Length: 488
Image (tube, rainbow, N blue to C red):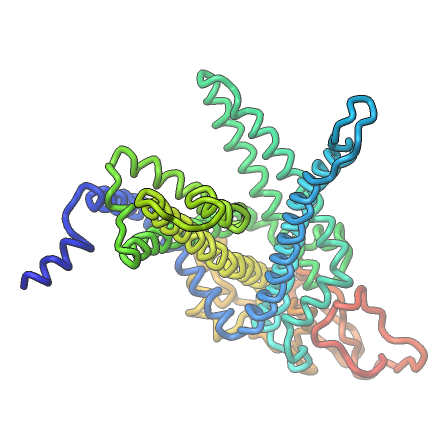
């Protein structure tokens, strides 16, 4: 009994710090209670995205490859930036080693380029999700065996122009917004409302720009046109549902981002306590509350910038030991040992929390891209008055609130079931995007009804003469997942 009490008192005993954690949990519960409708709505949409990812696990596998490339790019970028500080040249006038002017100018180029290529890799994952989830949403027997891998191929070839243009625009805008925000943070405290107003306006504009970029790239993966053509077609698909699209995207993003951050922060603090226990040296629970609060706030800030945190830890970790125990690396005094224990707990907790946030944020990006793709596919179905019975409960009822008059496709009188192949009332799958056509005996192709979705490839009537010299022109190499194998 005494040992049980000692164990309880050591790890979860009553104390000021425990009450602080309980207060934080209570604040989180109040927030969840006030926003339960939005959270529940986002959870329903995320459940649909999870079902799509479960059916297409290759989307996650290919996205891991893209994320690995991004990590490699980030490492090289950091190495190059650090290396610029060691570039010196002799100043003949003062006989000193000075930094060349072109080195400082190169850093101004490296800054926006990092934001641009961050969007490039994010947009590549968007295209991978669009093709993989689109092939699952609109099944076609002629689809590639691994649609997500085909999406990666398109993202690196025929879709690279659209990806780069969208990334260039969004990256430069974000870089400019960040620099203006940094300048406004230096304003006097009496002008802080202007800073808050600017942050709200800039955040809203950047969110709208990112939303349009994502839906444009999804539409480009579906139709295979150039940037402007894809943007116009994507806008036509979602123009009647821009508010719903923005709300669905923003709510899902906020819930996923907040959840991943809180979960990573909790794991980091738990690892801090675990490291204290493993070393039998308490740092987290031994600090007074008036010191613990700013320490935890600073810890939460470093977790929110995981890439920079991991870089600083990797760079400074060897120096921490030298600064604490000397160049020989031997901690001879008690205060050196205690300081080393404290550094081990803090840096270990920071590393675990930052890595967890990177991992969960990566999964969250895939889920958000899947949500946007499913919403885009649903908009295409709604515009074409077609439906799939398998989605009635799983998808349509969930998105009923996003439909005008709460009418889902299956409620319409002209709605027809989706059928990717056939002689009558067929759907030609264009990279996952359907086009409803009816082939008559006279060879006419009629649209029922006229879709506002991307319409790129009309299957010719059965009696159409075959041209042995040319094939039916397809707007882009990626225009169809279900591409005819014989010349038309």
